[in-house]
Length: 159
Image (cartoon, rainbow, N blue to C red; front, top):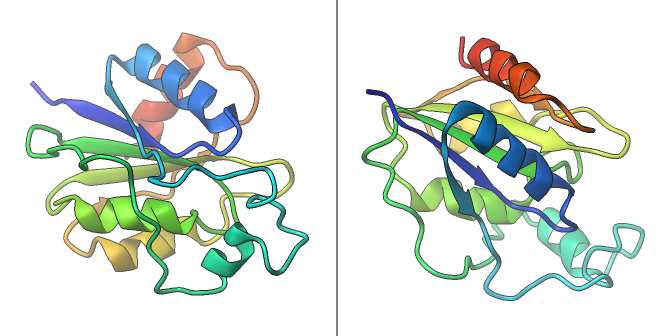
């Protein structure tokens, strides 16, 4: 039987809610991509070019450390990866996660939360980080959705 993992990074709790709801709707395991050094409110100020998030996103090679070990993905066929949209892609800590896991042969489905933009270039950027995986386009999971809606979205997103 295929197993599914929902991995997520959440800066403010919004993406965490979406990830928990998605995992419950599809019967998936849940993994938080937690930063080794938690982000402060000042770190997340995207209007400040010197803030931690701005500096990280300005450096394509930046890979913030994750707290603890990355999950063993051997038993999973599909990995949903959730994040807030930062600069039209996934935050660099998600890149750390993607590169730490062996996702070859897996289906990876990005999902995001955003206050004003779409998921942007995330899927194409993620493809460059996990060339052995099939990375789908994914989409936004803003707001509240029923379990039936989330289940239907997940089925469609995997195609």
